[in-house]
Length: 450
Image (cartoon, rainbow, N blue to C red; front, side, top):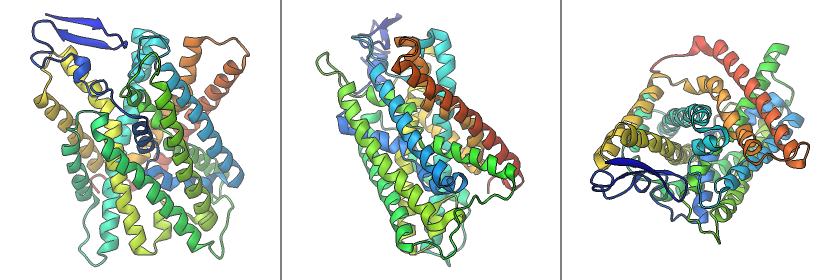
């Protein structure tokens, strides 16, 4: 006989009173990847948040600066850092806002704020768009970086299609995806975090060493007013994509132990602060030094603009590969949790290694297939992601805060949250418009299975 019981931490447990969770001797909470291990240290959250936040998108920030210009570009970067740190603090605080109850997943917090059904419909689609979309983009990015490494190291070798490199990159995840939970991938996450800081440092230090171009130009590179406007919209979307780590923050915090005397928000916040310091050390130097060196001629990927020394650029590309391997796993873990919850709780599959092997391998195969079929998926994500990246990062936490805590009207908290909501909605709107314009402009260049 199977029944649902509400655990002490607020999660829903599925227990088989006869023999445990269908022969495993564990409740669903003890088997699912988000809640199966609560022994994380505060520095685990630093590794995971850096890995989730600092994506390969950092290399496109100089290009975003070229579309925005010095003044607006710096303002957008600084404001985004401050706003997203604030909304991340909100989520850390709300994780245990009810004594004895933990909101281990983003959608559980949404259900508390908006109701059982509405909360799921508001949060889950957006979270899945971000997490699955990012995993597909990282499949493409991993394959692209592998190809660039190959072409730099062996320029005279036979050219190999990017599709094969994406498949090679994807094959790694068939193995790594079987690691059961966040704590089991902490070593991979550490390596990824170190690599992100390393290739960011290479990007800005090599730009500084190269120096300014002789004819460097900081003017807006587009000729028509229409192009200027839409390039600004696209640049804002690039910045929004750079701060997408909120989608996994509650799931990361769920792995940290909590007691009444020392709630999980204390070590989690310490880890987040250190992570955001690393984010600043990656984002600001790359964006500012890269734009200073190349002006409006900078490429979408700063490493492409650098070109030399070849050994250093090849090393940076391999660092990107290692980093996106870790990032893929961080974003996939909540998806695995949702999949396995549905399979066990709704479809009554027996939890165990065979189920995990089949379910997770299927997910890796599908994301790899989409990446190979649609190598231009990153452009599409600029449009679809506009509806998800900005809400889940910039203003959905603020709406939840207002709905749950109900601060007094026109108080500092009320005003701050409404400012973040308004800016977030504007960002969502312009990023989506810019992404759609980019698709229309570039559609003729899209090639399937290229």
